[in-house]
Length: 324
Image 1: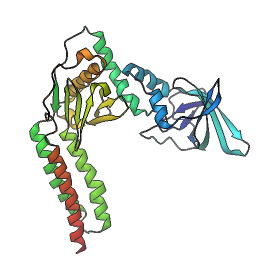
Image 2: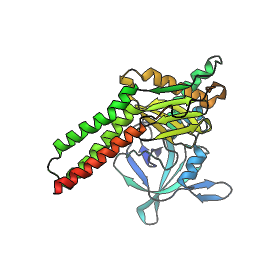
Image 3: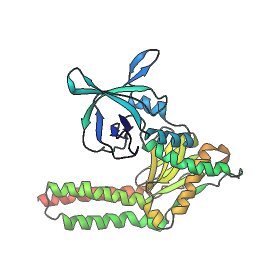
Image 4: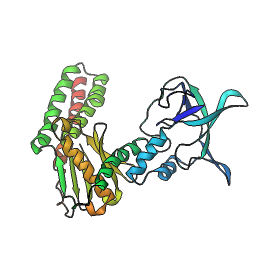
């Protein structure tokens, strides 16, 4: 049979002579830890997820692009029925990820389509997408003659917008939640908390982001947090899937929603920033020579946190008043 590994760790069974990217016939979901075959020692237990990701994590954008292509390539596999019939079938296949070891695991057959998950059992697909997208930027940069180091960079939406959005959104959201959930009770509390709070955080993050690139590394400011990554921990950056993302060497991703910024005309600037970060991560001579003063970015973090805290206090106060 033909199998295609899915991001969630499942195996999608494909037609033998069909399109390798077809929807598939049915799904095989793992029901046990996998075992890998080694010529010297035979079948060995599967490494932990953390060890597997560390062993296969790409070290360069070009390597990530090639690895991403291989992870979606179909592979040949065999499905064995156990001694108790079809209750415990075992599938054996050769992994598409280097070192392409034979892999065996107990599975369960399902007719439903694959459920996409953010993290895979092996290397998460999202850990490959950003450096793979950045590989094109790096290829363009390497094709050009060596140029001067990039200047220190600070990007973000206008300060007036970053200051105005959090309190205005908080007040409007509280008013809308009051109008929609005026009956009180536990259901209204849950609506205000689990529906209203994500809207507030998403809006503040989309309009309150900042990005700083200097001699020492990259700083990403989101709704409530500021993350500082030295160059030794930066792999690449890319605008992908509506987000600007900086990926660390450990696979962690730090970014923000880029769609509002692109609608406001900041799309080309974000693409240039992604190219600068990717080139500087791969080529130390392209890194800025100057360091930005402390506190250059993140001045509105306190305001953002106060607005979120105020919204949570309003939820609590509204719930207490509805019970009196």
